[in-house]
Image 1 (cartoon, helix red, strand yellow):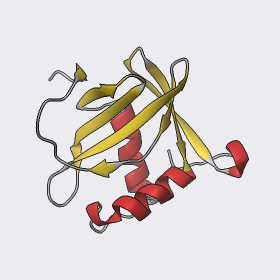
Image 2 (spheres, one colour; image 1 turned 60 degrees about the vertical axis):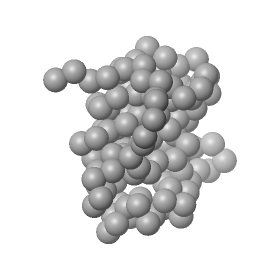
Image 3 (cartoon, helix red, strand yellow; image 1 turned 30 degrees about the vertical axis):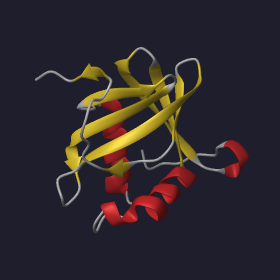
Length: 126
């Protein structure tokens, strides 16, 4: 996950293959997305910085082996990994947007617990 290659407009990125749900088979994660998450959600990471390999690996795990996947609206999904948590125990949440066919774009990632109803489209079984 940490080996970023050339991307659109010189923004390095990685492509993560996902086979959890048929709607998404590839997720593009741009270096600028990691920077965005660090700037906007850094307080949720505690001592972990968004660009560190451990955080990148946790993000890759969320896309390949999530606890569950939510579909809040058409064309958007949130991969949730409760095995990756911050110091407060909040799960890693990684929203994506479908961009073409079954390819998706990582929008951001953050740690948060949620309340209320969620449109869960897939849940990992034991």
